[in-house]
Image (cartoon, rainbow, N blue to C red):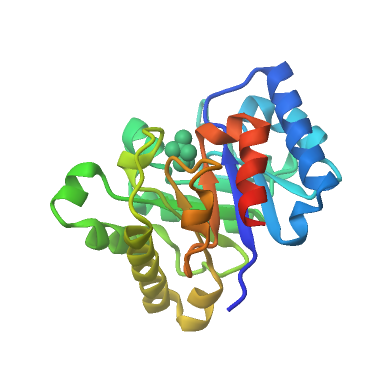
Length: 253
Ligand code: PEP
């Protein structure tokens, strides 16, 4: 099953106008000049404030634009929120949903993530649905159970390979420099694909991209992205330096 790898950057709450514009321009130039998107797809997810300006900088580069969250409603009385229709309107094609930082900081549940994903599809956005276990869950031997339950509850029935990407991100590996072993990642990704098959059917599950995220760097990217069920990476810290982001891509694309 050939799944084109997706190299995705999650800038989180980082970047002012000047640095965001420079970072996006450097990523766009690198991807374009080296034709890196012949072999991989690319996605950059800046904070809401930079979406417009980063979208401009990415034009014509083949790097897609995404947001880091969306509400489930199209519009209305939801102060501080942004709707999927608004994101589509401003040039986004993807939205990250259910990142562990949103689950932790904003109490987002898997049921809410599924509701947001279904709304994203309706607006023509693709959802990057994040799942992953905490350190306590891993130490209690519950990793597979937690991840499978999160797939069952966070992925809507309308999900398919065109509108959905899953990102497995062990919470304890995010921003810590710690990573699971490749064998651990392989085991979780296989279980996630199996859970997707139970939910959506084998054909769709075989085509959905499952990314690994959690302290991916240029030096370890190949270890994870060469595994059978790993179809790309969701990159936080290392996506804030164009050379690191591009070197991850160069290692695998
Ligand atoms: C993330 O925030 O999705 C992430 C994986 O962060 P980092 O690469 O910094 O661990």
